[in-house]
Length: 214
Image: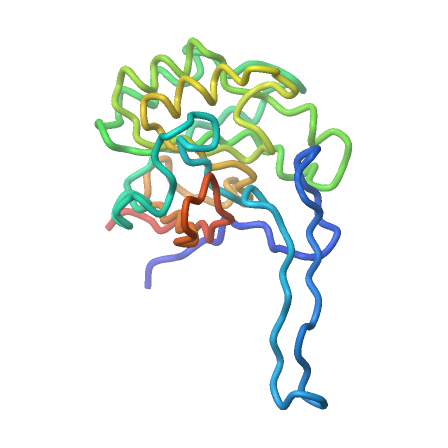
């Protein structure tokens, strides 16, 4: 049996969210005693926890996640190990060049910083970030999605979010707040990042998993 690894942070009330995003509140709306069944009420933002950014997150009239075929969220990925980086360090073209050599157009690039170990701590906000030059290399190589185990693909706060703007303008989807990348046993594998099919979704929490290549 092939080993499946869950790369998703659980969603719980009071969990960390990006500054300015809605707080997460998970409550019971209907209960067994009064209503004969249980129904939860979930309040959260579209970029809660492990999530995907759509082009419409930053670009008016651009594609939302519900407009993509579901096949776009499954693909071969190459893991880039940059877990030796310091806080606030940029991920540069030198860090990703070798990984692009073994990638094909349409593949995913997954940035393993190891920063998920700081989830819920102040240091989580001082994460490594993708440089604009490295983002340019990804787009030039035809990478269709880039994921990272940090709260933001770029250095925050950035008023104009140049890396988001560049990647999303070139239809390169973004996944943030991954976890457990250090458990992945090989550099290459298959990744599934499934967003909810919400109308006009500028982003969505996802269930992210890895499975090894056959």
